[in-house]
Image (tube, rainbow, N blue to C red; front, top):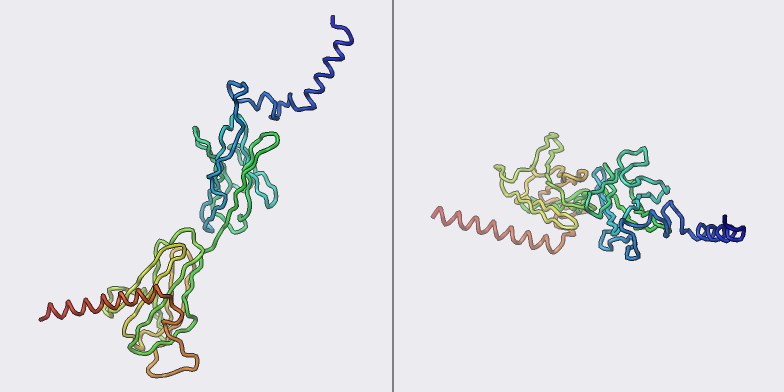
Length: 293
C-alpha cells in the first residue's frame, strides 16, 4: 500500500494538471479531444484560409452565403455567431435559432463551412463570426452587406426637348451585386393614359437602346425626331429594382424658364454612343439609297 507521503504527492500532481488544463476533456489545448487521429507531436493547429472573402454583398430577398474555410479542423466544432446580438446561429451542422432562414452547410472531404441565409433582409447586415472550438477559441469574421438596388433616370423629374430633336434618357441602376437580367422601357401618354412597352422595331422607327453592364448598369434610350406624340412619362423598369420615371415635354418653339434638354448632364461615354448611333443611321440611309438607285 502506498505511503501517505506518496498519496499526497500524487494528489498535488493531479491538481497541477487540472489547473493547467492538461486534462481538459471539454476540448482544451492539452486535451485528448484536441488530438486528431494518430496523435503525436506532429499535429497541426486549426487555421483559417486567408483567401476566404471577409466582405460579402447580397441582394435583399435573395440568398447570402458566408464562407469559412478551416484547415486541420480535426474533431473540433465550427460555429457561426451573429455579432449584433451575440446569438449562436449554428453549431456544426445544427441550427440553434428559431429563424429557419439560417443554415450551416458542410461538404464532406472539404474544409468549407458555409452559413446560408435565405431571403436576406436588410436587418441581416453586419458582422458574423466563424468560431472554432479551440482553447482559446479561434475566430474568422465576415461582414455581410445587404443592398437594395435602385434605379433613377438622370436629369428628371422633367425633361424638355425641342420638336425634331432626339430624346435621350439615361437610366442608372446601382447597388446591385449583379446586373439586371433585363431592362424594359415604357412610354405612357398622360392624356389618354395609354402605357406600352417601347418597341425597337415599331412602325415609328428611330428608337434605340444601348445598355452598359458593370459595377453599375446604365441603359440609354434614344428616340429620334421627337414629335408632340412622344411627350409623356417614360419609365425604366429593371428586373431587380423599382421602376424609375421621368416626364418628357416635346416643345414646339416654346422656351420655359427652367428649360432642360435630354442631353443635360450626360457623360462622355453617352456622347460617344450617340455619335456611333448617328453614324449607324447615316450608313443605313446611305445603303438604302444605294439599293434604290
